[in-house]
Length: 211
Image 1 (tube, one colour):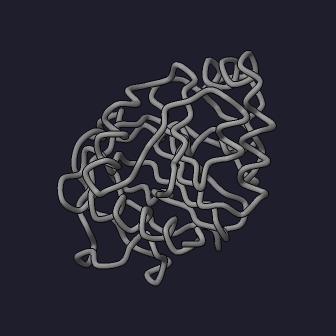
Image 2: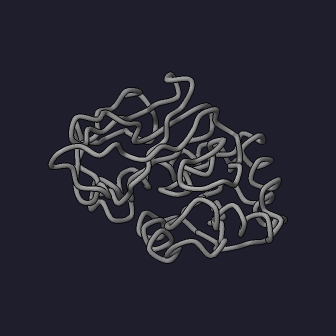
């Protein structure tokens, strides 16, 4: 049975992510062990909180290189919320360098009249890579749950797999490149739509693992 490593670096509620994965038949394993991350069939990098503490915690646990190796190994990899943002080179939220796996920066929503920051609650995705495995069997323009004040701004817009509109601003809501997928919203809080996404990810993992 496929084992999915859920990276523990003290940033957010890992258990809601694990519960979502378990609900779709996966075997998640919460870990901060580089060896387990390396041996796992897939990796999920969740996260809630601020950019600098996240990078400091990853560094103190010697997890930066194991995460980069997991992505380079082409095993299925899913980043969620802060786990998307730290894949980038830097953030306006702090001074620490990010993982630098994706070229670009994390930016703060611009203030505008009537705009609420953080962007919090349900909003609709516009899928820019509609054939992505993560989006299979979803309704068109699916509703998902967001909580964030910062968004990712990739240099290469081809990596964007979904965008979302908040006020007058269209921003990246998800990215995908090869085996790497990451989302700004919380699939584990996004009802049946989010569970379908997690199920799609688990199906992808099973396809990649020899029987």
